Image (cartoon, rainbow, N blue to C red; front, top):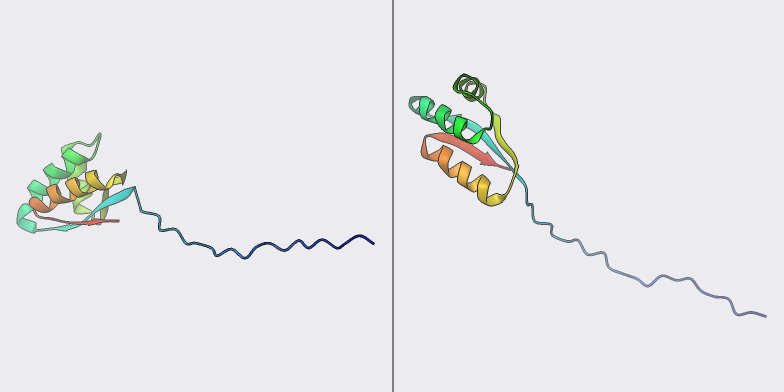
Length: 92
């Protein structure tokens, strides 16, 4: 007789790896009314291919994504710039 072979897989613990997020979204959620013009100009600086009228419409219809899929450093830079002119920003 042939010996029976056992196909037992070794017990492996599944490790849940912490995956650090590398791409972020910068979202403008609000602004101080007295700083509206400054916020519009700053949004125009950070959104590609947008004119002043489009930036105004974007700011007036919040919340809006300002930049999507950016590195953490760039997201923090944009957040700081918008907050400096009176914007309320969330980085996801």
